[in-house]
Amino acid sequence: MMAGVVALSGCATKGFVQETVTPVEGRVADLETTADELGEQIDAVDQRSQQGIQQASTAAQAAQAAANTAGDSAAAAGRTAETAQEGATQANTRVTAVESRISSLNNYSVAQTVTVQFALESSTLTDAGTATLQGIAGQVQAGDFIEIQGFTDTTGDPNYNLSLSERRAISVQRYLVTQNVPLFRTEIVGLGTALPVADNDTREGRERNRRVEIRLLRAAN
Image 1 (tube, rainbow, N blue to C red):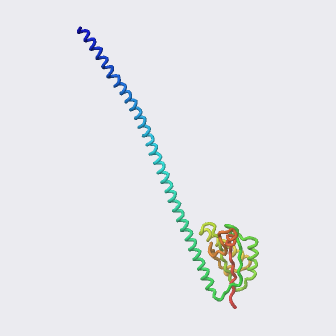
Image 2: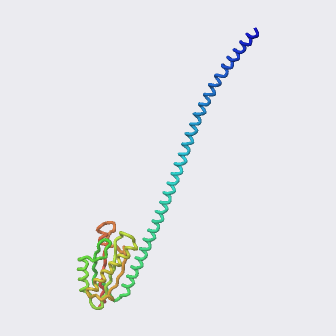
Image 3: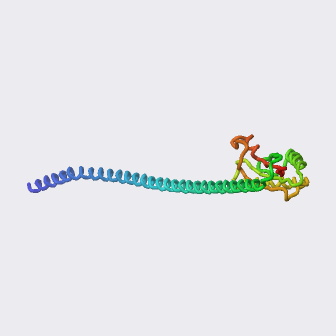
């Protein structure tokens, strides 16, 4: 009888353990699965975070590069403005000098004025220009003076334009000397874009502004 009780107790205990342990094992397996899934989700979130950090870093670098470029552009614009101002100041100074020289010739008046045109960025006389200069050279008398003023359109750098306008005036002066006009009777000045005679916003206007004006000054009787 005791053996039977023990046997029954053993069976009851084993069955009880199985009934108790089996659900627990299932829940443990479920928890392990859930933990694996949470781990994968955490890894995915971490990966997206790293990507976000990298994108933010790239965007910041791009923004800094853009800011640097903008700063360089602003500095270049400032230098261009300073150059333009220097060119304008030099032109005004030369205009004042011309007016002063003309004013000093109180006994002289303008007997004749002619204009010769030049090609873009050129200081070479054209055939039409030399024909015009031959005409005025033939009008020069003893005691006359020749005032030669060079000009450009607004295309290009202001300082370059001043230099180009002076080279144009020199070309005219040299040609007049070959036509027996005494060198000491000539005065030249390059005025750049000053005193335009036409609108520089049009092609025709720019062509008219690329010029040298020659004034024949003659003593009043």
